[in-house]
Length: 296
Image (cartoon, rainbow, N blue to C red; front, top):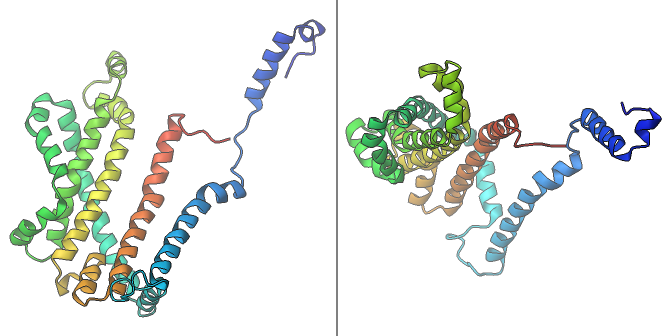
């Protein structure tokens, strides 16, 4: 509490200093108002979606694209989605692809994390395979589908192999980038305190490299999802079930653009949902733990 001593109150500079200290002590984090959340988080994407739908409907209504086999109206696509839901197929399409994508991403995480640490910490390994990882990261995922089919056949193993080849380089390179950005002072301080070897990696390097590692994870998931869609489109087979990529290919084969747009929208929705439910909370947690995300 601010002092009530007259001698202190007569000195405005000290009184102001004490008032500032009191404000720091009493400041509390307040919850974001619902209206503010609505305006800042919900309204912008809603307006963007409505704008896209309006432009889409306008292209159809004003005859700019007068062939419904090329561009069906939004209502037609919605009816296809609704029928798939009523028939019980919609969740099956989504689960087939999402389960494959997440499982393949977990395998890529298990392989890419130690590989990234090895490349980042051992100079010989970095010189040997660092450029190869960068080259693999720039290689289109679809290029791995034909050899994977020849080597493993038309099965889920082929799908996981394509996901691994697409995601592991991104995860490893993200971790390497994060380790490279760790301040040398942290490493010297860790060695002074006895944190060397695995202890230094676990207590010093890994926490400091977490932002770069998280960026690599996000990119790795994007590569996993794109790799899976490419594999499902090219390697369609009845025994594999119908995922979103296979649904897209089925629509193309049947010249059913409503089904094609249904698949595209579902692929987009799943990608956005994974980012909002998994990676965005992780990113906020990392930023908040470093004092980079402050809300009042």
